[in-house]
Image 1 (cartoon, rainbow, N blue to C red):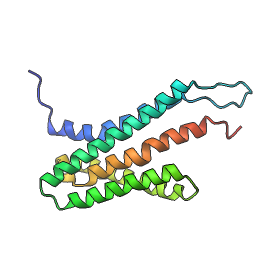
Image 2 (cartoon, rainbow, N blue to C red; image 1 turned 90 degrees about the vertical axis):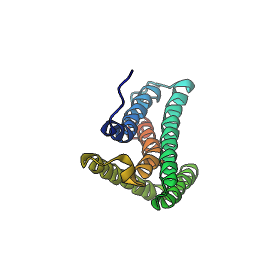
Image 3 (cartoon, rainbow, N blue to C red; image 1 turned 90 degrees about the horizontal axis):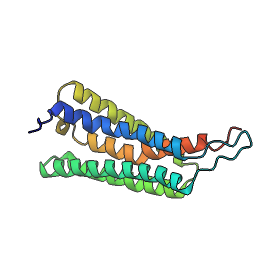
Image 4 (tube, rainbow, N blue to C red; image 1 turned 135 degrees about the vertical axis):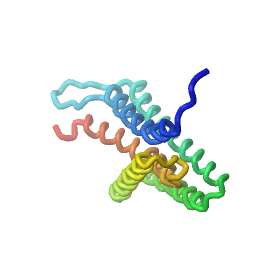
Length: 171
């Protein structure tokens, strides 16, 4: 019979699995996206490889959104007053991210920077929660906000910066 995981292991998984997914998105993007054409030799990526980079990014984002929804539902069932606020903020972040990604424009940058900062602050709060020995549920809406931020702001930004770096823009 397998041993049950401790609450500290579950806390660490909630926090660090999305961070490891960032590394996965980066590695897949590095293997799949074409390199810069600075030397005059074209290094085109196949459509399959580019599709894989998008699928890994989208899959990571969807998994984080599902985990955030699961945690918000658990908070709602427990009668937490912060659950309604968390649901509203997470839905607003998803809607804002969808609008920003689809519309583009220069005003996307400050909103994405704000989302990245908020996600980083949520990560630090979760680390402090973990270090103090408290349970994940005691973090309230911080965990769903972190997971939503990873899904909406971090994963697409990693893919975008990798694609921008490989575009040959600096040649």
